[in-house]
Length: 536
Image (cartoon, rainbow, N blue to C red; front, side, top):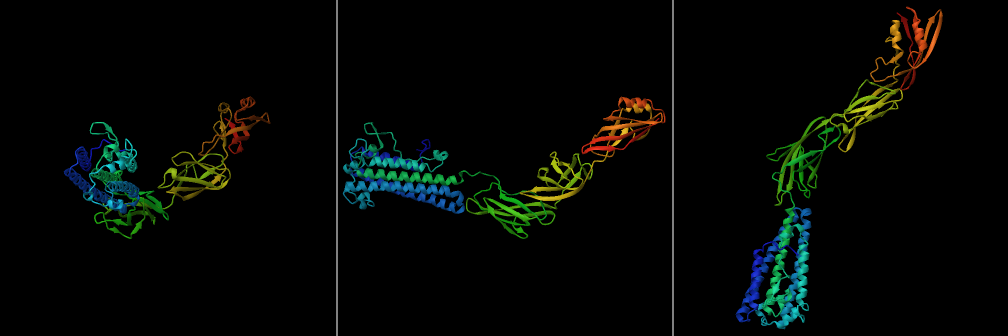
């Protein structure tokens, strides 16, 4: 496991050099001077291991400090560091037990006594028979002895401790504890890790090799824990400027309501609980908050500010937000902002007139100061009416069915709640009757040619602003002919052929009457006033 492209650390190079020295010594006859060399190397390894222990304990102390500053953020990494500590302790205890057992087997002393004995006090330190049997057993490859079990423990440890680090950072680590080789004997033949390290190795060499493994385990623990500690801030964003920000849900609120805003430091840490003091203002130089002060609860790095709206007008406020830096010291940042308080109001403007008419579309323009058209809602009560939004520019269409009165009610959503913004009453009336025209006049003199050219009766909506075009259903033409009144009935608004004959026979000064005029309207058929024409 782990990457192999990283350069060795100075500690690892020193251990490797010691291991090469030991390998060379094993190839020589074991004299007193060589044994003394093993003792010197062993004592150097013991000192190195003690230094490793102090280094990793210092890293754990840094973890403890960061945990006190920001528990939510550091705790996941701290818990993994504790797992690394537990895994390393278990492996080292196992290696220490192997060391005590092999010393006991070669020296004949009790195992417990051998756990703390100085290698210089062991007379059998140049022996290898019992040690070889202990580590290699009766096998040809070491699988029958303790060395195979030790190798499996080391491999399992490396897998477990490396899995504590995020995969994208594992390439930064070089754990050592290599059991893969390749290894060769003095004749250049391939060997496995077990045979290379423990076959016919004297006790002094075995002890040194085991202490070397302890050192590599401590080094692996230090590198992993140090990487975990750096991960606490490795994922943080880096900013070149930090400042306090106020983000209001709306800078326009109504009397009796609540102004709400988020206050935070830009590039803020969601796992922090900031301390926030708010007043009527703040001196950015001295960080002194003026006016009546209040504390704002900070959750997830953000303070939730709520202020009573008060009376209409511009409201100013300011304060200080304090957060804890990576070094554990508190840092304060000033902020200031303002909002506008207005009274509930709505503008309801009938596009045509202050009356709604039955049977036609009645356009209405509605707006609310401080609210967008999307925030505005409108309802209608009375008059059997309905109201619907026509476009996104505040235009609505009203339809009514019953004469009397109706009320248009306006609301607006401000933040998370809706507010009543006002209402307006309207009269509901029947559409006025159209006026019948013949040859462009309601009554009066008309030349015969003009009358014949008119071709019929035309209804008009005099003084009515809506686009409404009624149609004539029927009418009757009446005139005096040779002392008798004769009449002709027409369906629709056009003169019948018989009416044309009657008008052609009319004399100058003779009166012609258009009566019983019926017109089709949106609410039904209406009877219109008669038209009296004098042939001119």
